[in-house]
Amino acid sequence: MAKIGIVDSGCGGLSVYREILKVLPHSSYIYYADNANCPYGEKSPQFIIGRMNEICSLLISKGAAVIVVACNTATSAAIASLRESFPIPFVGMEPAVKPAALGTRSGVIGVLATEGTLKGSKYLHNKELYEDEVQILEHAGLGFVELVERGVLCGSEAESVVRSSLAPLLEAGADTIVLGCTHYPFLLPVMQKVAAELTPNPVRFIDPSPAVARRLVDVLRAEHIEPEDPRPGLELLCSGSREVALRLLGQFS
Ligand code: DGL
Image 1 (cartoon, protein in one colour):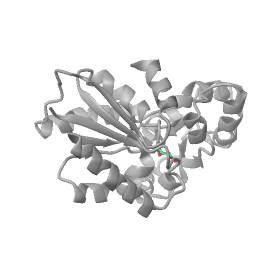
Image 2: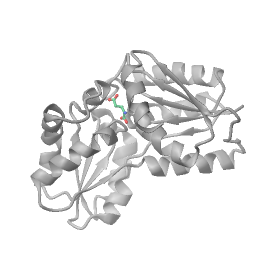
Image 3: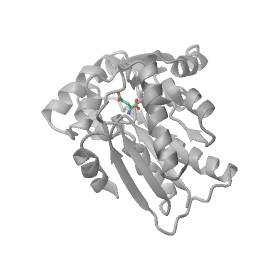
Image 4: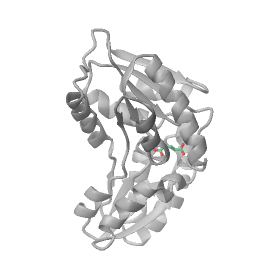
């Protein structure tokens, strides 16, 4: 039976899996968290391409018929090379600059992502398309990935880390924040709390995962891959500890 492979540097891709499960609840999944090597944000593209090749080979050998690269940083560094190397379809992440640019009222949007994503040609090209119409500000979510990997999703430490990256964007007038890293949606409640403390104005956070889940459905249909499996479920593979991933999974599956 065809399986759906999902890969991330760690637990972040579980926020994408959560959205995929809503549209494909009867499928069989294999999720690989490369958490022994997390974060990817400051690693070289060569390193990320090497890890993605190894992990995707493994996922395909275990029956993956399609792979979701549920990591903006890995999509940016490696998806073109993966598509050349393997004969299966890949679905990647894309920072949601377009819906943010179309929806902003203040004319200023903020993009939170890793250094790797913000420097990547995929994001820079996306930004170019909208920067004449709206002001686009960027900030690396410093320390966000590490918080999520430790399972620290609320409390004063999380609030202080989030405040450091969010404050400059909100102070510059951003009313819409693009979550450009798949770890960040797990910090959404903290971001909303901190935003409410920083500004009286409403702030919209955009997570591209629901759009990625819909894209996966389209790809499965186009490639004639049957997503339903008589034995649906998730196989979780981690290069490091499984503890936090299992805890996050317990929240929604
Ligand atoms: N979750 C990842 C992303 O979407 C990777 C974060 C990291 O490992 O630095 O970019």
